[in-house]
Length: 329
Image (cartoon, rainbow, N blue to C red):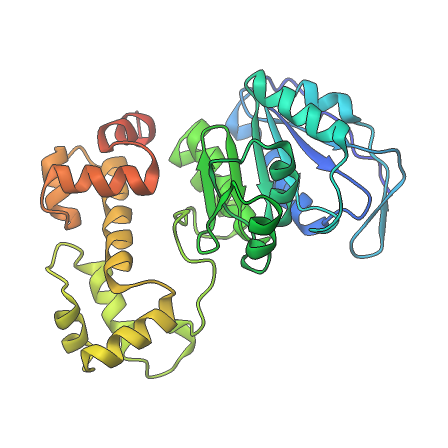
């Protein structure tokens, strides 16, 4: 197999991203990091990411899918990287080498960001850096992570969590959402959108979105909820009470509440807030409307309500978010 170069050739000067490689590598999770950060993107300029595959043990190494790989980059790259990605782990019961945990702790102490995909959260948990913080992992592993590290506030319902310079994501595909979130934070929405277009996927799913839904709306012909959800998205400023939503869906409130939770994995109120937050983000990025007008158009009514829900969902106030992400800055 072709050897993976530790740092792509060229004149890139951006943040160094190191994705860990280990025996039993989760191939898809590693490929997510390589695709987003390691693919040549000359249109992004010389400030774009440099990418390195970082073997934490001697090779050749096996990867899922019957692959055997050799990696030029070694564990010393952990000490150089600006962003270190843990793409899954060998198993939730497999111990994490002390040398690796110490290297990750040292990297974080000098200012590097640490990010995990799926079961990679168990590696970050072993460092102790997640203690007292929220973290995400695949919903199947949530209980095991709580048992292994009770000091972590594990959220099994979200796609990803950003806690300062430690970021965790849920099941494999949620790693794409987290990596795009990192691009968005570093280079703005236009860059993230461009990367998403190359991947042929939506540019952004909020980290607080449910990991899975038991009964997808789009896949259920005749569902009375699908038109309702489309209407809420189209009219976020409307007063959407539970009774109004149930009436629009032509259901009793009791049936509506049960069906809504089964379908979306969220309460109606939480789902509406998510829609309004997404609309507020769009308005802040794409328009120059005053914050008061954004609050009204998105359905929050007041700036204080907008700020409260926006900070909880995004981690930034509306004005800070606009300063960072407004298109055409």
